[in-house]
Amino acid sequence: MVRRVDSLGRIVIPKEIRKVLKIKENEQVEINVSNDSIILNRYSSIDKYDIALTNLIEVIETLYEEYIFFTDLSSIVLTPYKYQEYKGKYLSPYLSHLIDLRSDVCEISPRSLNLINEEEAIMASYNIKTIIKNGDTVGLLIMISNKELEDNSLERFKLMELFLDKYLE
Image (cartoon, rainbow, N blue to C red):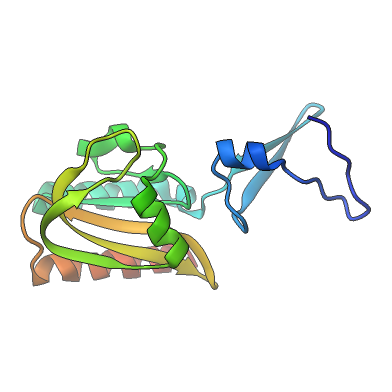
């Protein structure tokens, strides 16, 4: 495909490419230059904190058998060790819908949940929070558990939410 650069230096990414790469309106992209090429990548502010957040996720997984996920607008960015195969996978339509609506969901008793497209639903209790920073939706914070979520679990989730908010400043 060939596109023209307008007077402000803008290039339109064709709808077909945005659809295939699941780039949504107002989503940030990272621009890099390599030799004589311009490279566009999906941008995730969560990626910058990969090591610290991964360590925190692993501690929660080990101590409480609760599993924390962070997503950007279209895929899972950080996962607990048990679910590492989910990293980088596209979000299920249900999770994408929650992002579009900026909705939060808490299911204290185990229910069916699809995290990614190509996997069967898992039975889990879950808490899902839309991450909003400076008025823009960034992704989701998700906690799942094989047992019922109790007050302690919900407090840990709130702690993760505050921790993430501080990291994304």
